[in-house]
Length: 166
Image (cartoon, rainbow, N blue to C red; front, side, top):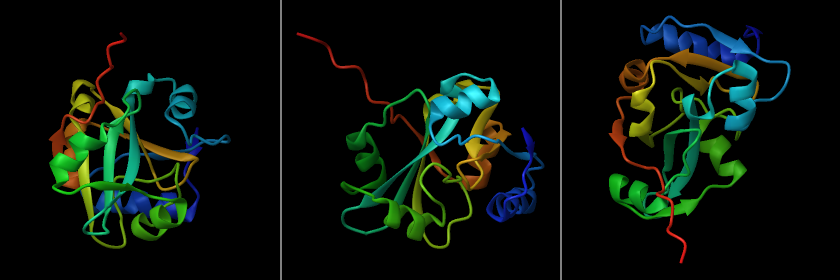
């Protein structure tokens, strides 16, 4: 890990400071696009990664950003119920235009327009979680309380439960 230098990661660091969160944004030599890659680079568990999963609201057309535990598969029906509309898939172009970030680097803050944001309640069990800082190579650590503070999003049960085998 080294201090962030990428302009997008530096912008995320400034947004965090502006929100009163004084944390270090760091970069890696290798990509941390997936929760497993990020956890391996950081030295934490996959569950401590606050991954951003982006959907498109089928009715509103808005980006719906779910900040979920890296160990969890997101239950789309639960998210749809939480945001009050059905979900559609979001392609890479939509993710970039709606969030300002590329897939694999979507930060939980700093969007160019309105998004609906939901936080996975499973993240609350950790002392520290790690979120993307705007690039697939940059991350920052914060507490779940700080994550909720900077996003003003609700904690929701979004984990898809394991299906019983017959």
